[in-house]
Length: 295
Picture 1 (cartoon, rainbow, N blue to C red):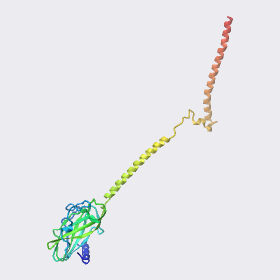
Picture 2 (picture 1 turned 90 degrees about the vertical axis):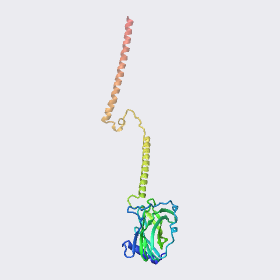
Picture 3 (picture 1 turned 135 degrees about the vertical axis):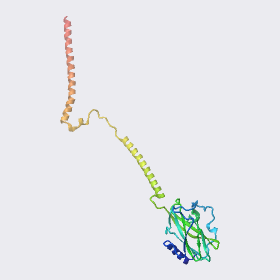
Picture 4 (picture 1 turned 180 degrees about the vertical axis):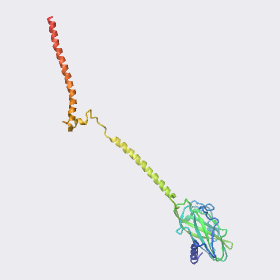
C-alpha cells in the first residue's frame, strides 16, 4: 500500500499535469478504449440490474493484490467536486509512481458504479480500457486517463464509483483499487432536461384538467340560473302607463279618457235607438186594433 508521504507528491504531480503536459520522466498514457469525441466509448457499457454483478468474477480476484513499491493517486480533471452529468463523458486521471524493483506494465483499467452502502448492487459497468503502451520504467512517474460515460437512465443521486487498475510486475499480474468513493450524478446542463420536461408536461396536464373542471362548473351554474328565472305574469291589455297616478290630469290622461268615453257613448246611442223603435212599434199596434174594431 502507498504511504501518505508518497501520495501527496503524486497528487501534486497530477494537478501539475493538468496545466503542463509533462517533462523529463513524466509519462501521460491514454487508454486504447477511451471515449471518442462524441461522448461514446469503444465497447458498450452495461447498465446492470440492481442487485446483480453480471455474473463476472470480482476484479480483485482476477489478479494478485497491489505490488509493493507501486504508489497510486487519482484526480478528477473535469470535475473536482465529483459532480458528473448523466450521459456526458467523464474521466479520472490515475498517477503511478514506480518504486518497485522492476518495470511496471499497466494493462487495463475497469470501473463500476455501485450502491454506496452495498457494493453488490451494481448500477452500471463501464467499458474496460486497455493500454498497449502502459510501461512505467523503474523510478518513473506516469499518469493514465480513464474515460467513461454515466448512463442517461441513471437518476440524479449519489453513487459509489469503484475503479481498479491491472498491471504486471516481472510478468506477475497485480491489481489495485485506486478509487473507491462517492460521486454524484447530476442532470445534464441544458434548457430542457428529462426532469424539467416531465415537470412541464405534468403541469400542462394539471392545468388542462383544472380548465375542464371549471368549464363544467360554469355550464352547470348557467343552467341553474336559467331555471331560477321568474316566469312572466300576464297583466291584461292595460299597460303600466294607464294606472300610473303621475299621469292623472295630464294631456295623456285626457286622451285616454276620451278614447275610453267614445265607445261608451256609441253604446248608449245604440241602446236609445233600440228603445225608440220599441216605443214606436207599441204605439202603432193599438192604432191598428182600433181601426179593425171600427170596421
